[in-house]
Image (cartoon, rainbow, N blue to C red; front, top):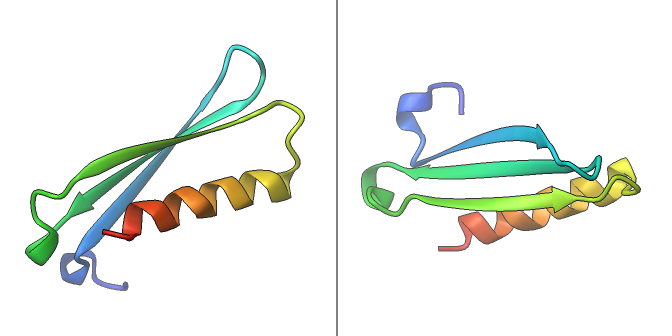
Length: 69
């Protein structure tokens, strides 16, 4: 969306390195309008040996899961 005020769901993704060399993606889904109060947080953790494509697939799966409700 070009105007964030029109979006019904905002997704904030933060990234942290894990102790084993992988990455932890924390996805906060913040609902607005008809989704008000339906906030949730999902986490995807990649291994150090994961390729970029595997990471993209994992992130995409978690995004889909967060948008299902």
